[in-house]
Each structure stands twice: as C-alpha cells, then as structure tokens.
Image (cartoon, rainbow, N blue to C red):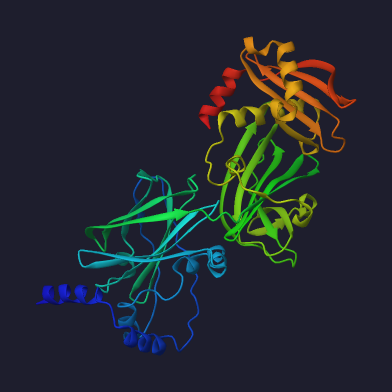
Length: 456
C-alpha cells in the first residue's frame, strides 16, 4: 500500500494544474509577502560530475507546501542566490527557459540561463515529491556539456524552499560566444534516471573593460589596479600587490562605490608568486564584486588583525571610470579574468621579463605602457630584428616599454636562451624611433622560465 501511494504521489506532482485554478492558488498563496532568505551554499567540483549536497531549511504551512509541490517556482531562481544575477534579471538579460523533463516520475525544470563574459549560470527546480529532508532532497548529480564537450569545473548553489528544490549550476570556464548547452541530471533523490536538456545559449555582450593602470607605492609595498570590467551581473577587477618576500600577512581587498557603500565580493582567484631574486612576492588577484551603479570606485587593500579588518588607506586607489573609455571585452582581455586558471606561456614570459628588468633598473611599471614590438611600430620592428639577427637565436620576443607621461621615451627588451636580457633605450625623434643606448643584464635562463611555468 505504501508503495502504491508513493508512486501515485509522484504521478500527481507531474500533472499540470488548469490555469484558472492555478491563478487562484497563486493569489491565495502570495497574498502575504515573504522575506528572502539569502543563504548561499557552495560546492565546487573539479571532476566532470558535480555533486550538489547543500543544506537549508524552510518552514511553510501544509497548504503552502502542497501548492509549491505542484507548481513551478515563482520568480527567478538564479536571482535568489546572487545579487549580481538579480540585477541582470531585473534588467532583462536573463533568458527564460521553462523546459521540463520527467524521468522516473520526477519532473525537473530548467527555469533560465544567463551567460556573460564572467560566467554561465543555469537555474532549475525539482519538486520534493517524497517529502525528503534537506540532506536527501539536495543530493543531486548533474553535469554540463558545451557543444558535446564536458565541462570539468563547476559550482552549485541549492536550497529547499517549501516542497521545491531550487538551485543553480555555474561555470567560469572559457566558452565560445554561442553554443549548444547540454544539462544532464543522472541522479535525483537517490533515484537514477536521465533528465537531459539541450539549450541554445548566446553570450550577453553588455560588458565593458576599462584599462586603469593606476599604482600606489608606500615603502616596500606597491598596489596596482590593471583593469576593471563592468557587466550587468558584476564588477571584475584585476589587481596586484607587491610586498617583501616572506610576508605572511593575509591580505584582501575592499571595494566602495561613490556613496561609500561596500560592494559585496562574489568570487575571486588569488595567487602569490615569489620573486626570490628581487626579494619580493606578488599577490595577483582577480575578483568579482557586485554590480557598480556609478562611475566612481575605490579599491582598498586590507589585512585581518585577529579578526579586526584594517584598511591600508595609504594604498587605496580611486578610479573615475567616466574619464576612461570603456572597450568591448575581447578574448585577449579575458585572459586577465577569472576564467583563466593559468596564463599562456607567452604572456607569462613577457610579464616575468618586464618585472625582472624593471626591478634591476629601478623602474616603476605603473609609469610605462608595454606591448609586443610589432604592435608598437612595424617598420621599427622589422629593422630591429634584422639588425639583431634574432631569427637565428632562441629568444623571448622583444617587448616595448614606453613612458606614459612623455610617450616619446622607453625601452626595448628581449631575452636570449642564456638568460641575458638585452635592453635598448629608445626615443622618438622627428617622428622616428631611434636607439640611443644599449646594455645587457643577466637574468633567468629560458629553460628555467620553462620549468617555472610548467610548475605553475
């Protein structure tokens, strides 16, 4: 008898309610406003299958529970978990899906999808047909596929609201501008099944990138903000903090808008790179904050002193984005973002050599623009490479560093296999770039750079 009731209940939950009765039920149900319980539950997976095992609780009346178990979640699922996604939804950038698939008498609904330069997020709902507790109800196995290729890094948010499980699946992997998304649930409520969805997805391109290049230095500390990217779903900042080698202080960063209100942190990647030769280490950080609604933003490094957050105000950087021209985000700019766990070898070598030379020469990198030689001046690049006979040597291609202030002075640097940095001081005279001085500095050998890169 119990098994018959169990099976009957599952089938009942998959039956749609007539619209007139549904409207009446909804009206009665939502007549009393409910406060959102914005608890976030995170589970990160690096394997192909994402196990979402998260905890929450909700207390509702028996009447409310019965209605919620039979109708889809009312409102935006992805907005529930994330203020950035709530903003994107309010601005109309979230794509409604509303597609339901039933397997083993359990219906799963993909509610919506959002995809921009920062992340891909999928919302879903599942009726808790067996009245399971939170621990069992939120035990779900799911994986994502992009154009028939499995996504290997995902995160999930989930909670039990009444008799509905609502949740999201998210990835920050580098993805094409448009693709076919496969969402495959393989187990729900400890029941094996196949809940498969194929959804066309196109990226929201309302993202602007601002090249900031601002630096603050105090004693042996240097804080630099490289880029700020604005999208409907958040504010992404690429920044670095140089500090003495061996500094074990826990550093973080706070962000304030024009009204002095702090923007909440939503995601970040952080890495410390030791530069033993230069007796320093660099904290590289890419962080995603809540959406910025105005042009003025202040970024402040902070430390945690036994539970007390201390702002390092002397290193604070204020940026007025109205004075910087925003650019559409390109794949090159996205290389600075959260999507990239590891920069490409070419960028790694270029960054290392510039820092190595700047440290030896006492240059402040924030005062220079850098570029590859052909991007700087093609005619000069051709003549330079011929004169240096670089085609016959194993080298790291030349890098140009030009003073931001004058725009007429700078350096060309390249490294040969033995680690020697060849440095050429250049100036702009009569609209032509000329070499006014040259010298060499011993640095890290290319094979050692290769090893360092492979160990990253």
